Image (tube, rainbow, N blue to C red):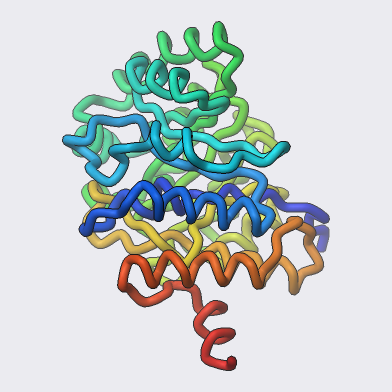
Length: 300
């Protein structure tokens, strides 16, 4: 069994994690979270999203957050930009890397961004051109790769098609998202085997929600398929406002604990990460979604 020696964790808590919270979150608390994550050794942090506050109120103030965080050399501070207007705002805020998102489900695409899959991909063309002109890297997301709340199971070949299109238009990496958390290890391995016929495995990442308690098992299955990059969210924050029943992302602390146990290097300090997750959980007045954090804190 050959497992990778190094794994990169993409921390999505400040964006994908906080976007679904109901109560207001101050700019200062968002800044503190990002700075805590930087201090813990995360090398990639998705800080915010340049979308209309009308649709995602929690992402209002992303420019202010970027302006106030303490950016460490060697750390990527990224933002989600669904369109050219969002990219222009991100550029003005000094963002050096952005992400775009598509879906493998037609119904989800319509519910999420009010257009078909092909229409959504076409909309990215001017954004990708502008990003190239400004020297900005673009990462891609594909939602509902293992199941959709409206369509049920998704054919992996549809995932491969969208992933190939994003990669061909210039996304240096494409993250495959189990948005509603219904995936299982066998289907996860099959998914990456099929998608990797179109896009190299070292250009793919996994994004797993833990709705059915399968996220860590799916990450392990992905490791067996040669995938070395995974999205995770501190304290298991998150969900999806357009996917009914979707629970939080897999907790960064829990992923790190498993990777440490496998002897896989990440460069992240688990104690510092647990502290960061507990701090933002206290701010939100909610239970910490990380089982590792819960076990460690109860043992103190």
